[in-house]
Length: 300
Image (tube, rainbow, N blue to C red; front, top):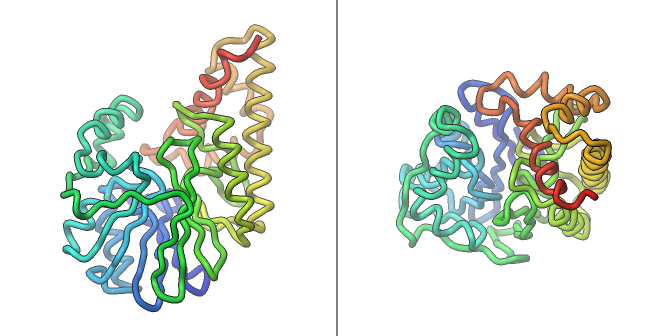
């Protein structure tokens, strides 16, 4: 689906589920650049969708928002399939984990559980010549289109947001929110860093994007600044709610999560819409855990 003059949104449909993971193809006059690939298990769907727009073998860059399996798990496999012309761009901290994904895979099993990790697929290793670290505020010129990389830690220390010009769309990965049908909640599984995430959203706001496109799922309905400010408020609301419960002596995150769902219609809606997919079952609860673990040591 074309969402602006140069940007296409692609639903990679992991395990056949729609509206779970969006990736974004940016087409310039000289080159094409793909922002994220989704997991390895959705590689065939991604390749088929790319063929409808470009010749995948002419894809110049794969720019990853981060290396978590549902975002970059298929990147090295895609490069291995389409040949030697494509380069993967990633935060410098992610380079070594694409070249040798063994530690990434171990972490995925630990965080997601072996069953979910294996459903997404184990990333393949790749030679270092195909991977390049991308600096904060670095520009990628693909001919009439410039894609600016913004380092945005919080969800992950190696997270990057990409601003596409002249379309002025921010492709934000997991730096902003999980977003469905106008509702949103934080993407904040452990080890989430709340203050870093808020500062990262401020960095995106400073770029004044007209629109925001998230990974889960799609182009936001509101203006860029509106959705970014809403995402900040929601993180702060969750943080304040959790702190209040802990001060009252409620230490059990399971109980706090159930209480949150009773008062947060947006999150309850997203849980019902999204968590039928085994890849993301319990994701809202994990997002609460990230903020919970980040603040419990600070609550007096």
